[in-house]
Length: 89
Length: 89
Length: 89
Length: 89
Image (cartoon, rainbow over all chains, first blue to last red; front, side, top):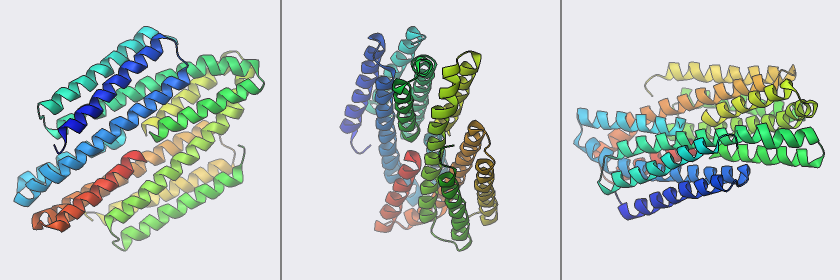
């Protein structure tokens, strides 16, 4: 992973957002404001996923593809399936 | 909100997922496995959002619409904008 | 529907985009360029859906909610399910 | 492209769906039914995109990665950007 510290920081922020939304629910904050926070959290989560996927393609997949053989095919297939899960989630 | 306890439970689980993914990053787990967890977390987050939105339509929007007047229009517009943010996030 | 002519124009454009992408496939255009067109088409489609949903909430749902009774509940439930399909598609 | 005929068939079906939805708008069909068709069309479109992307990774990207050098990096970056557009659209 190219920048572990950066991912950890973003994931800690996501954990904080999940906690913040709990606080909003507990204090009966307005539904629409809670939904706005959830949309922001979803975008942040997608952005982490796209970063990880880019790293994965640049390292793991690129290396396997250079080496060639069935491992290269397997890595590409695995990446394709992960992309499909992201697009559909 | 129809079931505050249920939302809090789901949000605590989301907080735990964000923490679990941090652990995976720290321990250099395989990227594809981390991405699978992120997809699951995104789906769980969307599901909380759809539940909150359904509650909001059933209570806040329905009441305002019964009362009528500009407040009804305002509530519908606000809900539409929240839906657009969800669909696009 | 508030503006039938506008929806028809946007849907005809979407039909044209689907035809244009067929042309790109036939002529072996570069995959990434085809994907860019598909992303644009998906956004345009979502935008039509959000417009229709907004119209639906402002007319059908608002009227049913003003009238009250089980029909109002049914309309809200139906709208919620349509929103869930959009968010998850 | 691994199966041009199959993509063309699916794209013609998408063109037909766009035309069918125009018919529904013209005949003032119920909004919720139109939205159901749009969700189906969006899923079909995503599925074409995921197929094309998988083909692209298996051919174009795999070949460039085997050859190595800056072209490999460029292809990976290009694919990453296309994936980001899909996930966010």
